Amino acid sequence: MTLTAGLGLKLEHLDAALAARDPGLWFEVHSENYMMDGGPRLAALETVRREHPVSLHGVGLSLASVTPPNPGHVERLARLAARIEPCAVSDHLAWTRWEGVEHGDFLPFPRSRQALDCVVDNIQRVQDVLRRPLLVENPSTYLDLPGHDLDEASFLAEMVRRSGCGLLVDVNNAFVSAHNLGGDAAAFLDALPAAAIGEIHLAGHSADPDGATGLLIDTHDAPVAETVWSLYARLVDRIGARPTLIERDDRLPPFDDLMIERGRAAALLTDLRANADLIDA
Figure 1 (tube, rainbow, N blue to C red):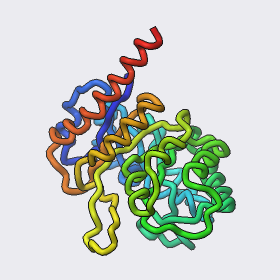
Figure 2 (cartoon, rainbow, N blue to C red):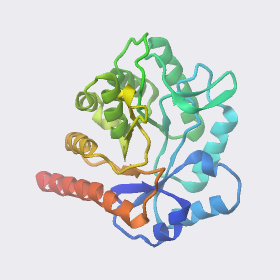
Figure 3 (cartoon, helix red, strand yellow):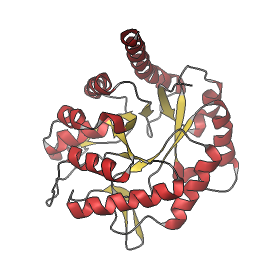
């Protein structure tokens, strides 16, 4: 099955997800919600997996920490991956843990050579246990820290080259970060290594309730913005079709509404593949 566009699996949409038969449809779950040995939640995921491809998207590896990922966490993730046989396993380029304390958020770090060494080592440790490449997601940023040795695209490219991982490119994160820090989202996406990109995320954002900041927040509580759709079209026109997820985690609309948004991405990917086949012929 060739994957096109997918949705984040929400248990309130379970029956609709099981019944859906759209070509190329797949679902993604947050790994940590299913890292147990049994129970109704895991049983529901296994039921979906019998009907659709599933990817595992984690929030707990803390890949940018100065200490290695928690071995128990990695082992539980590996057991889940062996059980579900996902089409991809991913996590975020950020740190969430310091001296054993979990902070519950994706925290930024200076893109120094020392940080690159830590990130590469952490990714390799995870991949050694998973026995497969990990996809690593670019973060959304709200504060430009001092101490960078590399721009973001160069850091990601070096991380890929040295660790053997792939990239999960979140186009909304790229847009939010560029808006907040005064960067160029299109130039950032243009600079990413095409061959390394294994998955794309699209999501909605919102303005900071404190209007004085001028920040955009990666809230996943709204439809994908037209500016993000334009950046996405530019990206896949350059790199080709990639499995693409519509993320929605708050203010959840009906399943059919999400499928309409998902259909927009699927149609674009299908057209790209059809045009590529015509050129190859």
